[in-house]
Length: 141
Image (cartoon, rainbow, N blue to C red; front, side):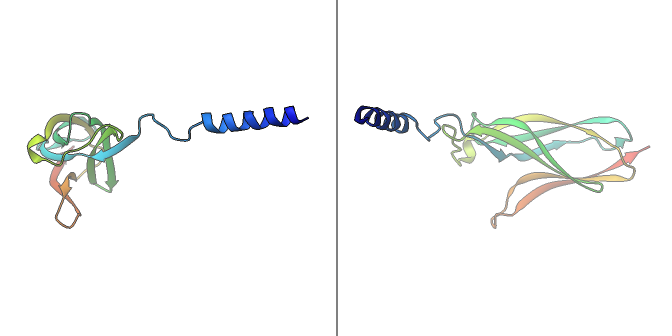
């Protein structure tokens, strides 16, 4: 009986010691990218897909463009490019001289009449509030 409880205790101790609750795998994180330039058509054609070319800034090469967060409010679109990175080994250096620019495309379908107001994320101001590049584009029928 002592042998069974000794073996059971040894098994429990080895199980607890051999299992690590720390995860050494990648820690995926997301970050907003600053839009520095927008190439938008002067007018949009109703029902047509338009390609909007954006130049974004990445803080380091290990940040990878993942897509867009687009928040629609009636005919207003707030657009934020999203970057993905491994938080374990990818760090932004906060050095404006080391910024990497990349061109990305947003496909947009004009599904409403009137005009669209686009607000492209342009970073944070001194108070930590978001700033935007705003453009109003009419829709042609």
